[in-house]
Image (cartoon, rainbow, N blue to C red):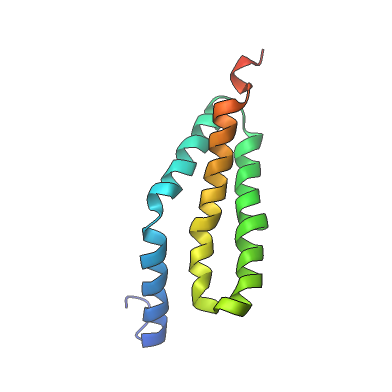
Length: 102
C-alpha cells in the first residue's frame, strides 16, 4: 500500500510476498553454497547454476505454464528455480574436486 492504493496491485503484491517468503530459507541456502564455492575459487559454477535456474527453469516454466495456470501462478516458479539452483550448487560442493586444484 506504500506504492499503490489499487486493490488489484495490493492483492498481487500480497500473493507474491506470501508465496516467495515461504521459501527464503531455500534462497539463503543457495547464497551460502554459491558463496562457499566462490570463496574456494570455483566461480564458474555459481554463475552457471544461477543462469540455469533463472533462464532454463524459471523463465521457460513461467512463460509456458502461465498459459495454463494463469498469471498469478508465476510466483511459484521463483522458489522452484531456487530449488534447482540450490541442488546444483550443493551437488557440486559435495562431489567436485575444486579444493584439490594446484
